[in-house]
Image 1 (tube, helix red, strand yellow):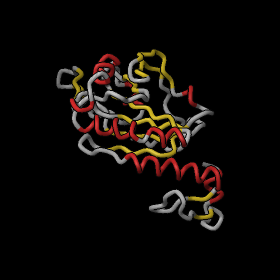
Image 2 (image 1 turned 120 degrees about the vertical axis):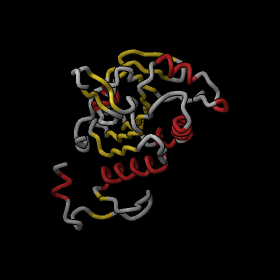
Image 3 (image 1 turned 60 degrees about the vertical axis):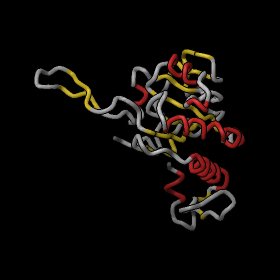
Length: 210
């Protein structure tokens, strides 16, 4: 796949469940441009095992994202009705009751395809009939999108590998530190630690163009 880093995030206009109980059509990313950063994450399927731990982990840190002006959005290939049913199921029974951020329905799988996270691909068999090879679900992709709608960070995990939400917050902090101070953030940087002056690092001209 080609990287989306430094490029406009692919447009989204889809059905989503918001506030844990409301189905809305024409949910877009563009509504956040100029106003909020976006953390868009994909997960494979509703009613699975690793996925609810991730969705709840994002909800538990939602206050930290909101304090940084970040909108968290989930997405999978399930229908909005599947999302709604899962949202009505208690956490102690494997559900995601209590999740308030939007969850997009990508039942057409076009959003996952556009973001390069859809597992498998369509192939032609010996009769030139289309068949799908692999699992037609999204890998655990995550995209940090700035206020201009540009992708600034992305990571894609295989299906068994859950993400670290604290690392997502660290990347938000790094981006916002660079935007505010013009300093680049070295390995293992965390908010409150020293960063590097871009001029001293010899990369200020490069960064000004990206």
